[in-house]
Structure formats: structure tokens, C-alpha cells
Amino acid sequence: MQAFTNRDGQLFAEGVALSAIAERFGTPTYVYSRAHIEAQYRAYADALAGVPHLVCFAVKANSNLGVLNVLARLGAGFDIVSRGELERVLAAGGDAAKIVFSGVGKTRDDMRRALEVGVHCFNVESVDELERLQVVAAELGKTAAISLRVNPDVDAGTHPYISTGLKENKFGIDIEQAPAVYARAAALPNLKVVGVDCHIGSQLTSLPPFLDALDRLLALVDQLAEQGIQIKHLDLGGGLGVQYRDEQPPLAGDYIKAVRERIQGRDLALVFEPGRYIVANAGVLLTRVEYLKHTTHKDFAIIDAAMNDLIRPALYQAWMDVTPVQPRDGQARNYDLVGPICETGDFLAKGRELVLAEGDLLAVRSAGAYGFVMSSNYNTRGRAAEVLVDGAQAFEVRRRETIEELYAGESLLPSAPRE
Ligand SMILES: Cc1ncc(COP(=O)(O)O)c(C=O)c1O
Ligand SMILES: N[C@@H](CCCC[NH3+])C(=O)O
Image 1 (cartoon, rainbow, N blue to C red):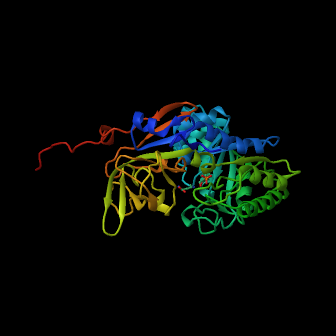
Image 2 (cartoon, helix red, strand yellow; image 1 turned 30 degrees about the vertical axis):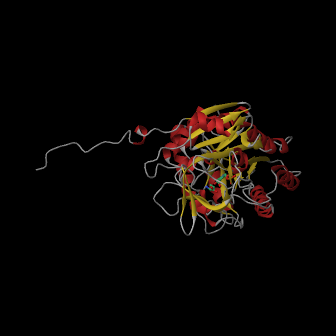
Image 3 (cartoon, rainbow, N blue to C red; image 1 turned 90 degrees about the vertical axis):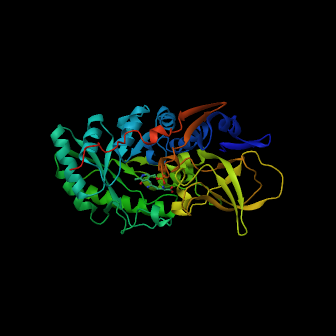
């Protein structure tokens, strides 16, 4: 479904004009559509009907409480990688028993809290983590359900920074070593082996890498059964891509259909950890043109959003669509859209044919995933507001950070006299 549509010469988020949101909440502001989030979640959940499953939204993609709450109300599970994400999920009404805990660097505190609230499963990424979890669980007198994140050595064919399933990546346990590590896990008294998981990368635009990884996991499940270790669930991670420009990634329904065909006849529950697929196209970053700067070489539109608000273009050379909220007639120019930050890498888009004037509003599309969550205070800029649209209403689900908040918690040196 299209969350952002053109009507009466301007762009709407569901039933609310983006110009009205800018008027009310200012810019830069992230705007999300509840209907889109729900539709994307349902694409996964509906395709899994009839199989025991969990769709665990990857909180790293968008951890806004309002967004998490929308998903929690739908019965979603959550994939977390930190204590912070855990507390957010609980604060948003998420069910601890539907949380899978991923990440290569879980601390003892992380483990304690996750055991205390009773997460569904720890996705363990190394032998040392397994041993640490045994100690922490024993101290608390608890049993930790675990899955090993295996590295199936599949090339996801995506950007090298977001490819995670190759031998040279830091993630997971080499699939060839997995049987031995499972044997160790099964021997530890406070751990209970329940699953196998993998996540081979993000923004995948074709099915074969997913299915290759699945085949390798299924071979491992069979091998483990011969060792007397029964796997209950298979967690295939996230990674399904979305359309930013002209990519044609598979739909969740087709992906899940292909997975279901391959696991037919097996007594396995399925877990997925989609992030981008659920929220990327549910969000835009709304920004205003501050200045137009025409030089002999280039035309720049200096906008009030910057790389601190949305770092994907600077970090991955990601192409993001930018659309005027109220398109105007006139002579288009070829603009670089740049922010106010003192870095040449501070751009959100380059070489766009646009008709612009100072004060115009622009929507940077597909910004619902890895947008606000990757923002920073660089150049002492307060972070953007976040607004969630539900039908004809817009709710500020996070207010803009104030200047005072930017230095709250810092202090001066005490003025002790120097000897
Ligand atoms: C373990 C794990 N699960 C899920 C995700 C979510 O990925 P995506 O947003 O591509 O669906 C990631 C991030 O790539 C991840 O590292
Ligand atoms: N932050 C990345 C995705 C990272 C996926 C996290 N494992 C992006 O914007 O594309």
C-alpha cells in the first residue's frame, strides 16, 4: 500500500496533509503511517497463518515507542540487540515472551535483565557468550532458551556494510563448527537449545540467497537430530529489501511461501526478524528549504535536515527519493540537497531535477527505517520530532529535542584553585 499519496496538488500521509504537519510540529520531522506499518506486518503474519510462528520486528530499524506500540497491539514479537531496546519494547506494551535477543556483544547486565523478564530466546553468537549465559542463568537459578546464530557463508549480494552472512563477517558461528557448539550448549545445565538462526544481510532484493541459507540451516537441523538435539524453531532473520528507487524486491508473501514449501513435513516453528520491510516506506523525513544557492558550478538547496538526521546517503551512498510536498510550476534546476553541517558529506540527495523556492517543503521518502534511530547531535543539532499518522489524525510520538536538552547532564570542572 502507498502511505504517502498526492491529492489536491500536495502530498498526504494517510488523511493528513504533510504541509499541515510541518505547520503544527515544525521541521525537520519524521512522519510515519500507522496503516502502512500494519499492512507490512500483516503481509508477514498472514503468510505464516497455520504454521507456529513469530514475526519479531527488528527494533533497530525504528525504536519509536508509538511505532513499537502499533506493532505490539498487532501481537508482534520483537528482535532486540540491547538493554535499551528491551526496555523500549516493554514500555511500548510488547510481550517479553515474544522477544528474541540478538547481537554479538551482550553484557552480563543485558543477560540478567532479559532472563528476569523472560525473553523467548537468546540468539547466541559465540562460544564465549554461551559460557557467559550459562553462568548468569545459573546465578539467577533460571534456564535460558537459546538458538545459535550460524553463519551460513552465503553472499547476500548487498552493500558490504550491511552484508552479515559471510565468513569474514563478525556475526554468528561458522556453520561447520555449529554441531560441536550445539553439543556444548546441550551439555550446559542452565541452557535449553530451542532454535537455529541466521541473518545474512539487509536490503536483499532476491530470494536465492535466503533460500540457500535456509537449505544450509535445514541440513544442520538434520545433523543435529542425528546428534540427539531436536530443534524447535528456525529463525531466518530479517533482510527482505524494499523499493527505494527501481529495485523489485520480492514480497513477503512470496518469500514466506517459498520458505514454507521447503520446510513442509517438518515439525518446525518459524521466526522472522524483519525491520526495513515493515517500516521503511511507512516513513518520510519532512524538511524545509532554507536557502537556494546558485554557484557557477552547481545549484544547492540548503535544507533544514542534515546528515545528523538521516545518515544513510552519507554512510552508504544510499539513494533516497525526494519529493516536493506542494509541487510548483517553473523551470527545474539540477540540485544537490545539502544540510547545514560542516562536512562535504552532508547531503541527502544529489543531482535532482526540481523546481524549488525558499521555504518549500520536501519529503525524503523511505525514511521510516534506519532514519531517526541512526540520528545524532552532531554540530549540536537537536534531534527531529517524530509524528505518527493514524487516519485523519497526527500524533507527536516524540517531540523535537530542545537546545537545553543537548547539554543537560554535562558539567563544568569544579573551580578548585591550582597549586
Ligand atoms: C540479527 C538481525 N536481525 C534483523 C535485522 C533487520 O534487518 P532488516 O532491517 O534488513 O530486515 C538485522 C539488521 O540487519 C539484524 O542484524
Ligand atoms: N543501517 C542500515 C542497515 C543495517 C542493518 C542492521 N543489521 C541501513 O540503513 O541500510
